[in-house]
Image (cartoon, rainbow, N blue to C red):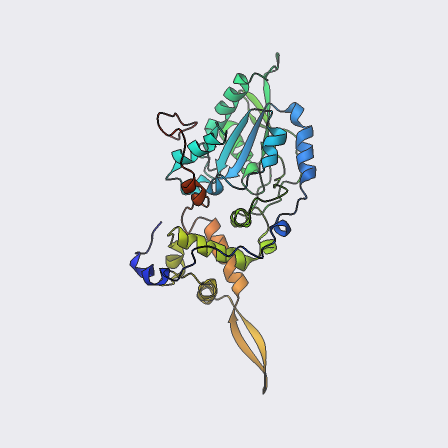
Length: 342
């Protein structure tokens, strides 16, 4: 979304960062490996499960998925749901699908659970996956049990509630929230469909015990998979500013009335704080005594910057654009994609 002419940022761009400084960030501190208990509970429930639905954020289609899911839960039919499609830049959707197919993910669907977009396609896809699986031998039982998995805050509970709205005309069965960690245990079965009779197991978000890179950790944090204060609001805001500029997404300039794009987070947060009235009095000790000085509240401005981005007001973004560009899709010619949207 180019909301301002390139000419307005041309002079500043020459001094923009070509890369984000990643040194000195302790990712293990942001994503402590404390979720083994949840994964163990999920494994113990597998005997009840006919299919796995893995939910992930469409803005990070390739990075940040927990590799242990495939290792420990991969014996069941698998559907990857890339949620929050309304917040993702999907101009190259077919290329994304082909890239995922190259990684062995043959069944992919994009959804927006807030507006129930594409959610109606899930039950038929799951039913077909189960029926075509050579491992499926259920005898006379006509009910299905599906496990919903994913890293924190990607919309697992929202998906379950959306399915209930679509197929049962019922309201919320699980809590949802904008912070990770709302679902803390494998819950009892939740009915989401009558015909076929289908139940879902909601599960806690489980992160990989080791994040593959600092940048992947920052992308996950931008999407709210970890509490902001563990990374630092200003660090996240800085990475967000760097990403928006690299992708030529200058909606923040118009939204905050900055006049021109900028690559200095201190300058941006200062102007955001002043515009929003987020300032604070600070006592400064001088040679003649204490003096009250008005200073911008940088953490508060950073929180607003992040909140505005996550709500979609700065435009859709593909945080894994670098991965998509650096890996040419295989089998692009004459290949039928796993899923196309209406």
